[in-house]
Length: 391
View 1 (tube, one colour):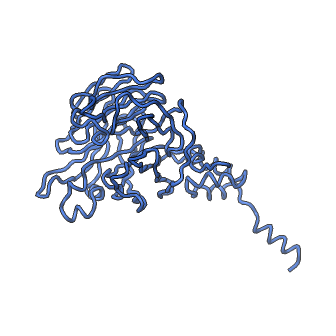
View 2 (view 1 turned 60 degrees about the horizontal axis):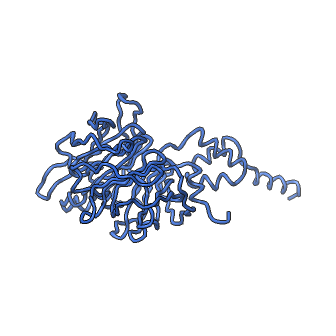
View 3 (view 1 turned 45 degrees about the horizontal axis):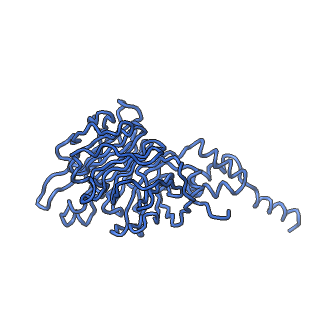
């Protein structure tokens, strides 16, 4: 073979990919791998940016943090990328030096509370943190929420023998201030374990998961109200709340009936809730019995002990999507719900999709606290996760 022929073959093998071909390849790359792909060359970087502009990956990620109860600042993170339909173990998320003025944007907040500080995660993965002085009232299991990028609210979780278990404090940048205590309806369950809490740019919303009482807290006035019982159907026994868009609050209720083996969950229904009055509106989605059985677990279904497999319901949502899961066992089925309408009165419906179970390393463990979060993830967020010292 002549030198000219060999040179032609080498050039053919080394011919770079360009244009639509390269962009088509990039469109199949998992989201977390887009960062290293963008560093291959200028052509690859352009293809990554062009692909994201043409086909934005708008579905939010589901993030599962496993926090040590002894040291909550230590956590392992597993992330589900809906574009790749796969879980990404993030065992070495770098923790950058804490700052006092980082804006907060994720709900619920990943936080670590000690006698010396309250640390709040400012990004989806727990790489950047904002640190505040600890609240004046010592708390073991409080609701912690951010109203907008700067205002922090802590509610409940205090020791009943020493302090008011329903105590509320607000931090607006200049220290903690006491606010009106939580309504009487929450007196017996004023802890994050029993409550579902979400926040908008104006208020914090709290729902008692089993009794169904809900209330709204305004950090500007420091007062609660209205307080309502959210039971649009008498068969609802477990419930939770979440925002599917900045101004659209949704109630998720598990409906069931009594049986010889105890309470038996039969369906999961979703209703829209008015964020000002807390009045329940129209139904916006429903999960069938087969999917509910997946949340409960096949073992419990076969044994007939339904209520033991479903003692709570979880809902993590944002940007028109929501994940429904069983907080008691993250290895049971998890479902992604896409809300098909974006405007009020447009006939909102749900498109359901079962997602793969988290890795085997994720198991219910009393020594660890599980925090589910839902967040849109951008290239800047991924760069922080893949960042290593010295690079």
